[in-house]
Length: 528
Image 1 (cartoon, rainbow, N blue to C red):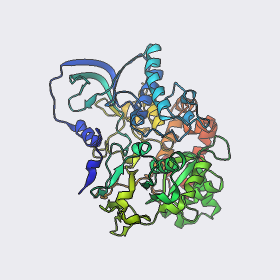
Image 2 (cartoon, one colour):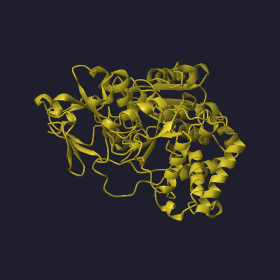
Image 3 (cartoon, rainbow, N blue to C red):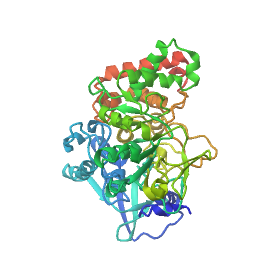
Image 4 (cartoon, rainbow, N blue to C red):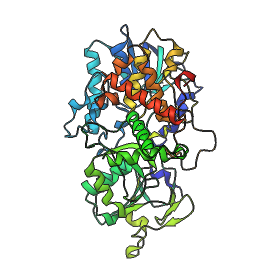
Protein backbone atom coordinates (compact mmCIF):
# COMPACT_ATOMS: atom_id res chain seq x y z
CA UNK A 1 0.00 0.00 0.00
CA UNK A 2 0.99 3.62 -0.47
CA UNK A 3 1.84 4.95 2.93
CA UNK A 4 1.56 8.67 2.45
CA UNK A 5 -0.72 8.14 5.44
CA UNK A 6 2.44 7.73 7.52
CA UNK A 7 2.70 11.50 7.17
CA UNK A 8 -0.09 12.14 9.64
CA UNK A 9 0.62 15.81 10.16
CA UNK A 10 -2.07 18.45 10.52
CA UNK A 11 -0.63 20.29 7.50
CA UNK A 12 -0.19 17.16 5.39
CA UNK A 13 -1.62 18.59 2.20
CA UNK A 14 -1.10 22.22 3.09
CA UNK A 15 0.34 22.92 -0.35
CA UNK A 16 -2.86 21.69 -2.01
CA UNK A 17 -5.10 23.69 0.30
CA UNK A 18 -3.00 26.79 -0.33
CA UNK A 19 -3.52 26.40 -4.07
CA UNK A 20 -7.25 26.13 -3.60
CA UNK A 21 -7.30 29.31 -1.59
CA UNK A 22 -5.65 31.20 -4.45
CA UNK A 23 -8.36 30.56 -7.02
CA UNK A 24 -11.41 29.83 -4.89
CA UNK A 25 -14.71 30.84 -6.50
CA UNK A 26 -16.25 30.77 -3.05
CA UNK A 27 -17.38 34.23 -1.97
CA UNK A 28 -19.19 33.90 1.32
CA UNK A 29 -20.57 36.92 3.12
CA UNK A 30 -17.95 38.38 5.37
CA UNK A 31 -19.23 39.06 8.86
CA UNK A 32 -17.01 42.11 9.22
CA UNK A 33 -14.64 44.19 7.12
CA UNK A 34 -11.29 45.74 7.94
CA UNK A 35 -9.44 48.26 5.81
CA UNK A 36 -5.76 49.07 5.34
CA UNK A 37 -3.35 50.53 2.81
CA UNK A 38 -1.43 47.25 2.39
CA UNK A 39 -2.57 43.71 3.04
CA UNK A 40 0.50 41.44 3.13
CA UNK A 41 -0.29 37.72 2.83
CA UNK A 42 2.55 35.68 4.34
CA UNK A 43 4.70 36.67 7.34
CA UNK A 44 7.79 34.66 6.42
CA UNK A 45 11.19 35.93 5.31
CA UNK A 46 9.84 37.68 2.19
CA UNK A 47 6.74 39.22 3.80
CA UNK A 48 8.50 40.49 6.92
CA UNK A 49 11.28 42.01 4.84
CA UNK A 50 8.76 43.68 2.52
CA UNK A 51 6.83 45.22 5.42
CA UNK A 52 9.97 46.48 7.18
CA UNK A 53 11.37 48.23 4.09
CA UNK A 54 7.92 49.59 3.21
CA UNK A 55 7.61 51.18 6.68
CA UNK A 56 11.13 52.66 6.43
CA UNK A 57 10.75 54.19 2.97
CA UNK A 58 7.06 54.96 2.34
CA UNK A 59 6.72 58.67 1.49
CA UNK A 60 3.83 58.94 3.97
CA UNK A 61 2.69 56.73 6.89
CA UNK A 62 0.89 53.57 5.79
CA UNK A 63 -1.30 51.03 7.56
CA UNK A 64 -0.47 47.34 7.10
CA UNK A 65 -2.40 44.18 7.86
CA UNK A 66 -0.06 41.17 7.93
CA UNK A 67 -1.75 37.78 7.62
CA UNK A 68 -0.35 34.29 8.03
CA UNK A 69 -1.86 30.83 8.33
CA UNK A 70 0.59 30.18 11.17
CA UNK A 71 0.03 31.58 14.65
CA UNK A 72 3.16 33.74 14.63
CA UNK A 73 5.46 35.37 12.09
CA UNK A 74 8.58 33.59 10.81
CA UNK A 75 7.17 31.49 7.98
CA UNK A 76 8.87 28.14 7.44
CA UNK A 77 10.97 28.57 10.61
CA UNK A 78 7.80 27.66 12.53
CA UNK A 79 7.78 24.25 10.81
CA UNK A 80 11.53 23.63 10.70
CA UNK A 81 13.23 20.84 12.65
CA UNK A 82 14.51 21.83 16.11
CA UNK A 83 18.18 21.29 15.30
CA UNK A 84 18.17 23.58 12.25
CA UNK A 85 20.18 26.79 12.22
CA UNK A 86 20.46 29.49 9.65
CA UNK A 87 23.21 28.33 7.31
CA UNK A 88 24.10 31.76 5.92
CA UNK A 89 25.50 34.52 8.15
CA UNK A 90 22.89 36.27 10.32
CA UNK A 91 24.31 39.61 9.18
CA UNK A 92 22.75 38.96 5.76
CA UNK A 93 19.33 37.67 6.88
CA UNK A 94 16.12 39.16 8.24
CA UNK A 95 14.96 42.72 7.60
CA UNK A 96 16.52 46.05 6.74
CA UNK A 97 15.99 47.90 10.03
CA UNK A 98 17.15 45.35 12.61
CA UNK A 99 20.30 43.25 12.92
CA UNK A 100 19.57 39.55 13.44
CA UNK A 101 23.15 38.99 14.63
CA UNK A 102 22.26 40.86 17.85
CA UNK A 103 19.79 38.05 18.64
CA UNK A 104 22.18 35.10 18.31
CA UNK A 105 24.71 33.56 20.70
CA UNK A 106 26.34 31.34 18.06
CA UNK A 107 30.08 32.04 17.51
CA UNK A 108 29.57 31.91 13.72
CA UNK A 109 26.41 34.01 14.03
CA UNK A 110 24.24 31.11 12.88
CA UNK A 111 20.91 31.98 14.38
CA UNK A 112 18.91 29.06 15.78
CA UNK A 113 15.29 28.45 14.92
CA UNK A 114 14.14 29.91 18.27
CA UNK A 115 16.37 32.98 17.89
CA UNK A 116 14.95 33.68 14.42
CA UNK A 117 11.35 33.28 15.62
CA UNK A 118 12.14 35.60 18.56
CA UNK A 119 13.61 38.15 16.11
CA UNK A 120 10.51 38.12 13.91
CA UNK A 121 8.16 38.37 16.91
CA UNK A 122 10.16 41.30 18.25
CA UNK A 123 9.74 43.18 14.97
CA UNK A 124 5.98 43.38 15.51
CA UNK A 125 6.51 45.24 18.78
CA UNK A 126 9.39 47.35 17.37
CA UNK A 127 7.21 48.53 14.51
CA UNK A 128 4.47 49.44 16.97
CA UNK A 129 6.88 51.31 19.24
CA UNK A 130 8.07 53.31 16.22
CA UNK A 131 4.49 54.45 15.66
CA UNK A 132 3.78 52.29 12.60
CA UNK A 133 0.28 50.86 12.16
CA UNK A 134 0.82 47.15 11.61
CA UNK A 135 -1.70 44.56 12.72
CA UNK A 136 -0.69 40.90 12.59
CA UNK A 137 -3.42 38.27 12.19
CA UNK A 138 -2.18 34.71 12.78
CA UNK A 139 -3.99 31.45 12.08
CA UNK A 140 -5.74 33.09 9.11
CA UNK A 141 -6.08 31.63 5.61
CA UNK A 142 -6.59 34.37 3.02
CA UNK A 143 -8.84 33.78 0.02
CA UNK A 144 -7.64 35.97 -2.86
CA UNK A 145 -10.88 35.27 -4.77
CA UNK A 146 -13.18 36.85 -2.18
CA UNK A 147 -10.65 39.26 -0.62
CA UNK A 148 -11.38 37.82 2.82
CA UNK A 149 -9.96 35.48 5.43
CA UNK A 150 -11.30 33.18 8.10
CA UNK A 151 -9.85 34.10 11.50
CA UNK A 152 -9.02 31.76 14.37
CA UNK A 153 -12.57 32.00 15.74
CA UNK A 154 -14.08 30.92 12.43
CA UNK A 155 -15.42 34.33 11.41
CA UNK A 156 -14.95 35.45 7.83
CA UNK A 157 -13.42 38.92 7.64
CA UNK A 158 -13.37 40.97 4.45
CA UNK A 159 -10.33 43.15 3.79
CA UNK A 160 -10.59 46.42 1.90
CA UNK A 161 -6.94 47.09 0.97
CA UNK A 162 -5.47 49.57 -1.49
CA UNK A 163 -2.72 47.06 -2.33
CA UNK A 164 -2.53 43.30 -1.77
CA UNK A 165 0.97 41.82 -1.43
CA UNK A 166 1.33 38.10 -2.13
CA UNK A 167 4.37 37.16 -0.05
CA UNK A 168 3.65 33.42 0.00
CA UNK A 169 4.42 32.87 -3.69
CA UNK A 170 7.96 31.64 -2.95
CA UNK A 171 7.09 29.61 0.12
CA UNK A 172 9.57 26.77 0.76
CA UNK A 173 8.47 23.16 0.42
CA UNK A 174 9.32 21.34 3.67
CA UNK A 175 9.28 17.57 4.32
CA UNK A 176 6.96 18.16 7.29
CA UNK A 177 4.31 19.62 4.97
CA UNK A 178 5.04 18.07 1.56
CA UNK A 179 4.68 14.28 1.31
CA UNK A 180 7.33 12.32 -0.61
CA UNK A 181 6.85 11.75 -4.33
CA UNK A 182 8.00 8.14 -3.95
CA UNK A 183 5.63 5.39 -2.82
CA UNK A 184 6.11 3.66 0.51
CA UNK A 185 5.42 0.03 1.32
CA UNK A 186 3.27 -1.03 4.25
CA UNK A 187 5.06 -1.10 7.58
CA UNK A 188 7.96 1.12 6.49
CA UNK A 189 8.92 3.64 9.19
CA UNK A 190 9.23 6.93 7.27
CA UNK A 191 9.59 10.21 9.16
CA UNK A 192 10.27 13.87 8.37
CA UNK A 193 13.55 15.19 9.83
CA UNK A 194 11.62 16.92 12.61
CA UNK A 195 11.06 13.55 14.29
CA UNK A 196 14.73 12.49 14.37
CA UNK A 197 15.48 13.78 17.89
CA UNK A 198 12.69 11.61 19.33
CA UNK A 199 14.07 8.43 17.69
CA UNK A 200 17.55 8.38 19.18
CA UNK A 201 20.36 5.92 18.56
CA UNK A 202 19.27 3.09 20.84
CA UNK A 203 18.69 -0.59 20.15
CA UNK A 204 20.95 -0.66 17.10
CA UNK A 205 18.56 1.48 15.12
CA UNK A 206 19.55 1.98 11.48
CA UNK A 207 18.81 5.07 9.41
CA UNK A 208 18.37 5.68 5.69
CA UNK A 209 18.40 9.39 4.80
CA UNK A 210 16.77 10.17 1.45
CA UNK A 211 17.94 13.42 -0.18
CA UNK A 212 21.30 15.15 -0.54
CA UNK A 213 20.33 18.81 -0.11
CA UNK A 214 20.73 20.96 3.00
CA UNK A 215 17.98 19.05 4.85
CA UNK A 216 19.64 15.70 4.13
CA UNK A 217 23.05 17.11 5.10
CA UNK A 218 21.60 18.40 8.39
CA UNK A 219 19.98 15.01 9.08
CA UNK A 220 23.28 13.14 8.58
CA UNK A 221 25.18 15.66 10.72
CA UNK A 222 22.55 15.32 13.47
CA UNK A 223 22.74 11.51 13.36
CA UNK A 224 26.55 11.58 13.57
CA UNK A 225 27.20 14.52 15.92
CA UNK A 226 24.21 14.60 18.25
CA UNK A 227 22.85 11.05 18.29
CA UNK A 228 26.27 9.43 17.79
CA UNK A 229 24.95 6.86 15.30
CA UNK A 230 27.89 4.88 13.86
CA UNK A 231 28.53 5.17 10.11
CA UNK A 232 27.81 1.50 9.46
CA UNK A 233 24.24 2.09 10.62
CA UNK A 234 23.57 4.95 8.17
CA UNK A 235 22.72 4.83 4.47
CA UNK A 236 22.45 8.16 2.65
CA UNK A 237 20.80 8.36 -0.77
CA UNK A 238 22.22 11.34 -2.71
CA UNK A 239 20.78 11.35 -6.25
CA UNK A 240 22.64 14.51 -7.34
CA UNK A 241 25.93 15.46 -5.69
CA UNK A 242 25.88 19.11 -4.59
CA UNK A 243 28.48 21.83 -4.57
CA UNK A 244 28.42 23.24 -1.03
CA UNK A 245 29.20 26.88 -0.20
CA UNK A 246 31.97 27.37 2.37
CA UNK A 247 30.78 29.48 5.28
CA UNK A 248 34.38 29.92 6.44
CA UNK A 249 36.40 30.75 3.31
CA UNK A 250 40.05 31.71 3.85
CA UNK A 251 39.38 35.32 2.84
CA UNK A 252 37.38 36.61 5.81
CA UNK A 253 33.71 37.49 5.29
CA UNK A 254 33.91 36.81 1.57
CA UNK A 255 31.30 34.12 1.09
CA UNK A 256 30.57 33.28 -2.56
CA UNK A 257 27.72 35.39 -4.01
CA UNK A 258 26.01 35.28 -7.40
CA UNK A 259 27.66 38.35 -8.97
CA UNK A 260 31.13 37.30 -7.79
CA UNK A 261 30.41 33.77 -9.04
CA UNK A 262 29.90 35.11 -12.59
CA UNK A 263 33.26 36.91 -12.31
CA UNK A 264 34.92 33.64 -11.22
CA UNK A 265 33.38 31.81 -14.19
CA UNK A 266 34.69 34.43 -16.65
CA UNK A 267 38.18 34.32 -15.10
CA UNK A 268 38.29 30.51 -15.21
CA UNK A 269 36.97 30.51 -18.80
CA UNK A 270 39.70 32.97 -19.88
CA UNK A 271 42.39 30.96 -18.04
CA UNK A 272 41.30 27.87 -19.99
CA UNK A 273 41.77 29.75 -23.28
CA UNK A 274 38.09 30.68 -23.69
CA UNK A 275 37.03 27.41 -25.40
CA UNK A 276 33.77 28.13 -27.32
CA UNK A 277 32.53 24.59 -26.63
CA UNK A 278 32.36 25.33 -22.88
CA UNK A 279 29.56 27.86 -23.41
CA UNK A 280 27.02 25.34 -24.68
CA UNK A 281 27.60 22.86 -21.85
CA UNK A 282 27.97 22.85 -18.08
CA UNK A 283 31.74 23.38 -18.49
CA UNK A 284 31.54 27.18 -18.18
CA UNK A 285 29.89 27.09 -14.75
CA UNK A 286 31.82 24.00 -13.62
CA UNK A 287 35.10 25.84 -14.29
CA UNK A 288 33.94 28.49 -11.80
CA UNK A 289 33.24 25.84 -9.16
CA UNK A 290 36.67 24.30 -9.73
CA UNK A 291 38.28 27.74 -9.26
CA UNK A 292 36.25 28.40 -6.10
CA UNK A 293 37.19 24.97 -4.74
CA UNK A 294 40.89 25.84 -5.16
CA UNK A 295 40.20 29.08 -3.26
CA UNK A 296 38.47 27.20 -0.42
CA UNK A 297 35.08 28.76 -1.17
CA UNK A 298 33.14 25.59 -2.03
CA UNK A 299 33.26 21.98 -0.84
CA UNK A 300 32.31 18.65 -2.43
CA UNK A 301 31.06 15.46 -0.73
CA UNK A 302 32.94 12.74 -2.61
CA UNK A 303 36.59 13.44 -3.48
CA UNK A 304 36.63 12.04 -7.02
CA UNK A 305 33.09 12.89 -8.14
CA UNK A 306 32.19 16.24 -9.70
CA UNK A 307 28.97 17.63 -8.20
CA UNK A 308 26.18 18.40 -10.67
CA UNK A 309 23.90 20.53 -8.52
CA UNK A 310 24.11 23.80 -6.60
CA UNK A 311 21.49 25.12 -4.16
CA UNK A 312 23.80 27.28 -2.00
CA UNK A 313 23.69 24.90 0.97
CA UNK A 314 26.34 26.33 3.29
CA UNK A 315 28.67 24.48 5.68
CA UNK A 316 31.93 25.13 7.49
CA UNK A 317 35.04 23.01 6.94
CA UNK A 318 34.43 20.82 10.02
CA UNK A 319 30.88 19.97 8.93
CA UNK A 320 32.01 19.29 5.35
CA UNK A 321 34.74 16.94 6.63
CA UNK A 322 32.24 15.09 8.82
CA UNK A 323 30.00 14.61 5.79
CA UNK A 324 32.98 13.45 3.70
CA UNK A 325 33.70 10.81 6.37
CA UNK A 326 30.19 9.56 5.62
CA UNK A 327 31.24 8.73 2.03
CA UNK A 328 31.07 4.93 2.62
CA UNK A 329 27.39 5.38 3.52
CA UNK A 330 26.53 7.39 0.39
CA UNK A 331 24.40 5.73 -2.28
CA UNK A 332 25.02 7.73 -5.44
CA UNK A 333 24.79 7.26 -9.19
CA UNK A 334 21.49 5.39 -9.12
CA UNK A 335 19.19 8.40 -9.59
CA UNK A 336 16.17 9.04 -7.43
CA UNK A 337 14.21 6.59 -5.32
CA UNK A 338 10.79 5.83 -6.82
CA UNK A 339 9.58 3.60 -4.00
CA UNK A 340 10.48 1.88 -0.75
CA UNK A 341 9.36 -1.75 -0.86
CA UNK A 342 7.55 -3.36 2.07
CA UNK A 343 10.81 -5.16 2.92
CA UNK A 344 12.66 -1.83 2.98
CA UNK A 345 14.57 -2.17 -0.30
CA UNK A 346 15.19 0.93 -2.41
CA UNK A 347 13.56 0.87 -5.86
CA UNK A 348 15.00 3.53 -8.19
CA UNK A 349 13.32 5.42 -11.01
CA UNK A 350 15.04 3.21 -13.61
CA UNK A 351 13.48 0.12 -12.01
CA UNK A 352 16.69 -1.16 -10.41
CA UNK A 353 16.55 -2.29 -6.78
CA UNK A 354 19.07 -2.06 -3.97
CA UNK A 355 18.97 -3.81 -0.60
CA UNK A 356 20.42 -1.85 2.33
CA UNK A 357 23.71 -3.28 3.70
CA UNK A 358 22.02 -4.66 6.84
CA UNK A 359 19.02 -6.25 5.08
CA UNK A 360 18.17 -9.69 6.54
CA UNK A 361 20.60 -9.27 9.42
CA UNK A 362 19.45 -11.63 12.14
CA UNK A 363 16.68 -12.72 9.81
CA UNK A 364 15.00 -9.31 9.93
CA UNK A 365 14.14 -7.24 6.86
CA UNK A 366 15.58 -3.74 6.32
CA UNK A 367 12.09 -2.35 6.93
CA UNK A 368 12.09 -3.84 10.45
CA UNK A 369 15.54 -2.46 11.27
CA UNK A 370 15.46 0.98 9.63
CA UNK A 371 13.98 4.43 10.09
CA UNK A 372 13.80 6.22 6.72
CA UNK A 373 14.14 10.03 6.78
CA UNK A 374 12.32 12.02 4.08
CA UNK A 375 14.53 14.96 3.00
CA UNK A 376 13.29 15.09 -0.60
CA UNK A 377 10.71 17.89 -0.54
CA UNK A 378 12.81 20.20 -2.74
CA UNK A 379 12.65 23.45 -0.77
CA UNK A 380 12.74 25.65 -3.86
CA UNK A 381 10.10 23.86 -5.92
CA UNK A 382 7.59 26.38 -4.51
CA UNK A 383 4.70 23.92 -4.56
CA UNK A 384 2.42 26.56 -3.01
CA UNK A 385 2.38 28.51 -6.26
CA UNK A 386 3.74 26.05 -8.86
CA UNK A 387 0.32 25.53 -10.46
CA UNK A 388 -0.43 29.24 -10.67
CA UNK A 389 0.24 31.31 -13.76
CA UNK A 390 3.33 33.50 -13.78
CA UNK A 391 2.59 37.16 -13.26
CA UNK A 392 4.52 40.41 -13.05
CA UNK A 393 5.73 41.65 -9.67
CA UNK A 394 3.53 44.76 -9.94
CA UNK A 395 0.04 44.30 -11.43
CA UNK A 396 -2.30 47.02 -12.67
CA UNK A 397 -4.96 45.67 -10.28
CA UNK A 398 -2.90 46.76 -7.26
CA UNK A 399 -1.49 43.34 -6.47
CA UNK A 400 2.22 42.93 -5.75
CA UNK A 401 3.81 39.47 -5.92
CA UNK A 402 7.19 39.07 -4.23
CA UNK A 403 9.31 36.85 -6.47
CA UNK A 404 12.91 35.85 -7.07
CA UNK A 405 14.68 38.73 -8.83
CA UNK A 406 18.17 38.13 -7.51
CA UNK A 407 19.99 34.94 -6.66
CA UNK A 408 21.97 33.74 -3.68
CA UNK A 409 21.63 34.87 -1.00
CA UNK A 410 18.18 36.20 -1.87
CA UNK A 411 14.87 35.66 -0.06
CA UNK A 412 14.97 38.49 2.45
CA UNK A 413 16.75 40.72 -0.04
CA UNK A 414 14.08 40.26 -2.73
CA UNK A 415 11.30 41.26 -0.32
CA UNK A 416 13.18 44.46 0.51
CA UNK A 417 13.87 45.33 -3.16
CA UNK A 418 10.21 44.96 -4.14
CA UNK A 419 9.14 47.16 -1.21
CA UNK A 420 11.74 49.84 -2.01
CA UNK A 421 10.53 50.00 -5.61
CA UNK A 422 6.92 50.21 -4.40
CA UNK A 423 7.89 53.32 -2.40
CA UNK A 424 9.32 55.15 -5.44
CA UNK A 425 6.40 57.36 -6.47
CA UNK A 426 8.41 58.70 -9.42
CA UNK A 427 8.42 55.29 -11.14
CA UNK A 428 5.48 54.14 -13.27
CA UNK A 429 4.10 50.60 -13.05
CA UNK A 430 5.86 49.72 -16.32
CA UNK A 431 9.16 51.15 -15.06
CA UNK A 432 8.92 49.17 -11.81
CA UNK A 433 8.28 45.93 -13.70
CA UNK A 434 11.14 46.70 -16.09
CA UNK A 435 13.39 46.68 -13.00
CA UNK A 436 12.00 43.25 -12.02
CA UNK A 437 12.94 40.81 -14.77
CA UNK A 438 11.94 37.28 -13.76
CA UNK A 439 13.53 34.00 -14.84
CA UNK A 440 11.45 32.44 -17.65
CA UNK A 441 8.82 29.91 -16.54
CA UNK A 442 9.78 26.23 -16.80
CA UNK A 443 9.18 24.79 -20.25
CA UNK A 444 5.75 23.36 -20.81
CA UNK A 445 5.49 19.60 -20.73
CA UNK A 446 4.91 16.75 -18.39
CA UNK A 447 6.26 17.38 -14.90
CA UNK A 448 8.62 14.54 -13.98
CA UNK A 449 6.81 11.97 -11.80
CA UNK A 450 9.25 12.50 -8.93
CA UNK A 451 9.04 16.30 -9.21
CA UNK A 452 11.43 18.85 -10.72
CA UNK A 453 15.17 18.79 -10.02
CA UNK A 454 16.25 22.27 -8.98
CA UNK A 455 19.75 23.67 -9.14
CA UNK A 456 21.22 21.51 -11.92
CA UNK A 457 24.54 22.90 -13.14
CA UNK A 458 24.00 23.28 -16.90
CA UNK A 459 24.79 25.74 -19.67
CA UNK A 460 24.44 29.47 -18.98
CA UNK A 461 21.39 30.23 -21.14
CA UNK A 462 20.10 33.79 -21.65
CA UNK A 463 17.30 33.24 -19.13
CA UNK A 464 19.54 31.61 -16.50
CA UNK A 465 18.79 33.05 -13.02
CA UNK A 466 22.42 34.18 -12.73
CA UNK A 467 22.07 36.38 -15.82
CA UNK A 468 18.63 37.61 -14.72
CA UNK A 469 20.25 38.67 -11.42
CA UNK A 470 23.08 40.45 -13.21
CA UNK A 471 20.75 42.31 -15.60
CA UNK A 472 18.48 43.34 -12.73
CA UNK A 473 21.39 44.65 -10.67
CA UNK A 474 22.68 46.61 -13.66
CA UNK A 475 19.25 48.26 -14.01
CA UNK A 476 19.12 48.98 -10.28
CA UNK A 477 22.49 50.71 -10.40
CA UNK A 478 21.11 52.90 -13.23
CA UNK A 479 18.05 53.87 -11.11
CA UNK A 480 18.56 57.15 -9.21
CA UNK A 481 19.22 56.53 -5.51
CA UNK A 482 18.92 52.75 -5.71
CA UNK A 483 22.64 51.91 -5.76
CA UNK A 484 23.20 54.09 -2.69
CA UNK A 485 20.35 52.34 -0.90
CA UNK A 486 21.62 48.86 -1.87
CA UNK A 487 25.12 49.48 -0.53
CA UNK A 488 23.69 50.60 2.81
CA UNK A 489 21.42 47.55 3.00
CA UNK A 490 22.47 44.73 5.35
CA UNK A 491 20.61 42.20 3.16
CA UNK A 492 22.57 42.94 -0.05
CA UNK A 493 25.25 40.33 -0.68
CA UNK A 494 27.84 42.66 -2.24
CA UNK A 495 27.45 45.06 0.69
CA UNK A 496 27.89 42.07 3.03
CA UNK A 497 31.17 41.30 1.27
CA UNK A 498 32.43 44.85 1.71
CA UNK A 499 31.94 46.26 -1.80
CA UNK A 500 31.51 50.02 -2.16
CA UNK A 501 28.96 51.31 -4.67
CA UNK A 502 31.76 52.13 -7.14
CA UNK A 503 33.25 48.64 -6.74
CA UNK A 504 29.85 46.97 -7.20
CA UNK A 505 29.13 48.98 -10.34
CA UNK A 506 32.58 48.17 -11.73
CA UNK A 507 32.12 44.43 -11.09
CA UNK A 508 28.73 44.43 -12.85
CA UNK A 509 30.11 46.29 -15.87
CA UNK A 510 33.12 43.97 -16.06
CA UNK A 511 30.83 40.92 -15.90
CA UNK A 512 28.54 42.32 -18.60
CA UNK A 513 31.46 43.15 -20.90
CA UNK A 514 32.95 39.66 -20.44
CA UNK A 515 29.62 37.95 -21.10
CA UNK A 516 28.97 40.07 -24.22
CA UNK A 517 32.43 39.18 -25.51
CA UNK A 518 31.73 35.48 -24.82
CA UNK A 519 28.44 35.78 -26.71
CA UNK A 520 26.35 34.94 -23.62
CA UNK A 521 24.75 38.37 -23.26
CA UNK A 522 23.43 40.81 -25.83
CA UNK A 523 24.84 44.33 -25.48
CA UNK A 524 22.43 46.43 -23.37
CA UNK A 525 21.87 48.93 -26.20
CA UNK A 526 20.29 46.16 -28.27
CA UNK A 527 17.80 45.16 -25.64
CA UNK A 528 18.28 43.11 -22.52
